[in-house]
Length: 134
Image (cartoon, rainbow, N blue to C red; front, top):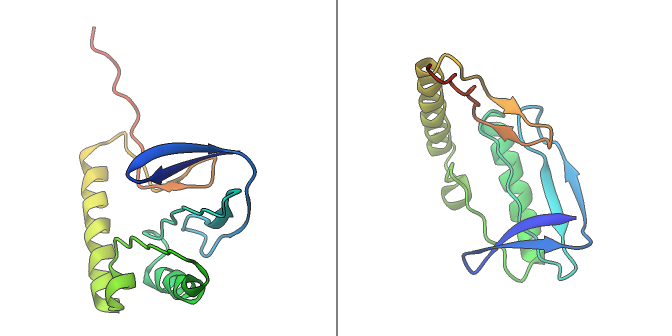
C-alpha cells in the first residue's frame, strides 16, 4: 500500500504494510481511518464539512479519547473545536465555508459538489474544464 505522509514538512510516500480500522461516521463525511504503517506512524484526515457540527464534535470527542494512547498526537481542526471546544465557533466556521462554497458554485456553471470520489474522499466541488476556443 502507498500512503502519502508529511514528515518534518516534507512529503514522503510510505510503501509497505498497513494495519488499522476505518468507519464512516456520517454519510456526508470522509471515512475516519486509523491506519498505521510498520513504524506505527499514523497520519490521516477526515472531512466533516458536509456532515454537520454534531458529526464533527463526535469525531473530536473520539480523538480526545484515543489521544492518550499515542506518544505524539497532533490534530489540525479547521473548525477550531479541538482547540476551543466551542460549538458556536465551530458552527460559524462551518457556515462561513458553506457560504464560500455556495458562492464558488454560483460563479461557475460547470461546478458541482460536494462530490464523493471513487476513493471515498469528499471534495467541495469539481468543475468541468472549459472547451478551448477556436
